[in-house]
Amino acid sequence: MILASLLVGCPATEDSKSPGGRDSTADTAPDSGDSAADTGDTGVDTGDTAEPVASYSLGLAHLVVTGTVSRGELGAAMALGDLDGDGLAELVVGAPSGAGGGAVHVFSGGRSGRVTDAEADARVAGLVGAELGTGLAVLDDLDGDGLPELAIGAPGHAERAGRVLIFAGPLVGPVPPASALATIDGLAAGDEMGVELGPLGDLDDDGHPELGVGAWMTDGNGVDSGALYGFARPTGALDASAALLSILGEAGSDWLGYAFAGGHDIDGDGFDDLLVGADGVDRDADALAGAAYFWPGPVGTIDRVRLTGERPAEFAGHAVASGAGWAAVGAFGHGRAREGLVGIVTERPVEGTLVAAARTTVSGTDGDLFGYALANAGDLDGDGVDDLAASARDDDTVAAEAGATHLLLAPFTGRDTVVLLGEAEGDASGYALAGGRDYDGDALADVAVGAWHQGGAEGGGAVYVWTGSPE
Image 1 (cartoon, rainbow, N blue to C red):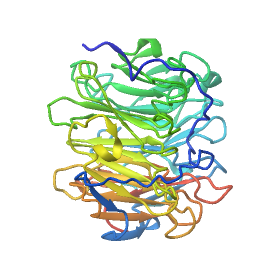
Image 2: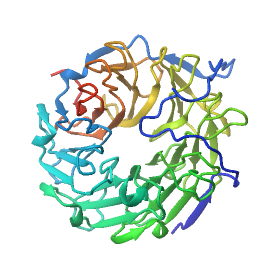
Image 3: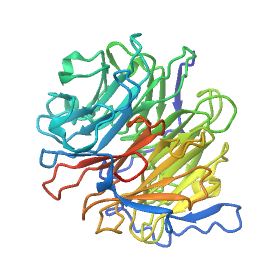
């Protein structure tokens, strides 16, 4: 069993940077100046998000779910997973700003058409002020009943200490928070435990992947340095001190734990590896350059590798994703006009900048914020290799800040892509992404795209499930 507490670096002094938050943009960050990457003759295969194979409106998606609560932010987080054992993935959608402290809605696999959140098959709500549904993850069976569990993050709970609630599947009808199989609380006010959730891979060789919990505002190594915790089959009432694994940010306002990805062998050595984002990291004098940390598996036995942004306000590591044989890091503030960039690594990287380490880089166009969200999309084209979903949250192809999501097919040439376009101005489609599971029963993976501002200033948000072709 691995039992480790890891620091990504040495303690440093605190600073006063403001957090990126779930609506993090570079709007209030320092001017990045001439931040275009000069890769030189590095062998990096650079591409552009232009010239897609095909573009479709998200309005043609297999399932469209719209929020009914004004400013409820439906689509701020999503997960796909088979909670009832019928072979189809359920869609789980968070609306963390909903009345009463947020809500989580579950839609049975196979549903189609346009529906509202009020038509969900199950709903978890009732934790006042908690921002329930900010983080979501479907987990392998924890309680031995043969069905997965659902983990829900509520980072606003208890003066923002945060709480994670774990529910046994299947979920039907109204589900009170008190029925949770387990809870995990943050240690101190302001930690925001549960801002991000996901599997870490099997760290202790018990045949079950550990649950990863991000607490990006913890103060273990400076104010808001952040932390990532790993838990092995949690039951009952726990807190962060029960973690099997603790990874701490190296300096104040690094915000480590806002994004992470685990459960895949990135470097081909037979062990699951771990990728952790810390988008507030400063690189020398480059404030908010951001970083992603790569831990080769078994985690805790080999030194980590740090990949940083190149210029101020790149926010590298705001989003990360991984699959078998690859890792992707988003830097949505990259470029002179914040075009954004995704760097894709296909072997164990060497310490340095993201652009230098990447085998492929894919960039957005002016103001796109490309790389704002990333997800392992699963095998979209049936070639046996997982593909990547990457969003450009402020893409204006349809209208200003309607957003877009690019489906990048392995082996990631940077140009082989389908683009899913937001429906209307200000939708911010691609704010969050989920994928890797079959929702409609065609034996191919599907992708969920969140548009938390859909419907305008008073709108409730929307989620789209794309199943491979327009409906």
